[in-house]
Image (cartoon, helix red, strand yellow):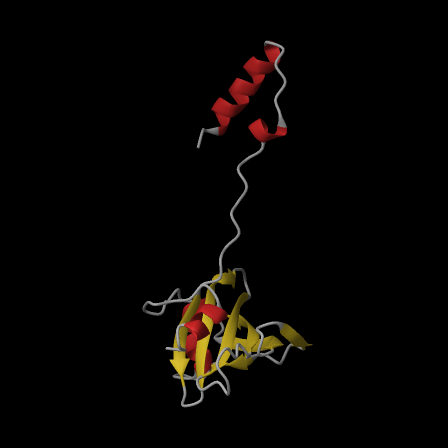
Length: 158
């Protein structure tokens, strides 16, 4: 990437020479959208829990999405799952849920429930504590990770 002084300098020289710049020449390159990156971080007898570390929102309050996927699907090709949205006050060690999204067997969202729960302290060795480690502390699951919940399910829900 060129330093700003060389871009400005080139623009001034170009203007002095009578050139006109197009928006493509003067605009900074567009930022690529961040892709989903689902990390399995916990498992029970019935569900796998995955966190999307590709869409962690930063700030005083950190946001992250967590999927709950059934281990044993009733039928092959069942992409039903739930994605919950969490907020963390990392320094205070507090968490709350802000929304829950239900996905049908075809993988399409069909219901969204929004209501911020009260802030709660995060108990040690809890699901929230493991999710906080991903959202706030930069911990990451060991590969493989998944670009989508569908890819996780298609891989056999490992």
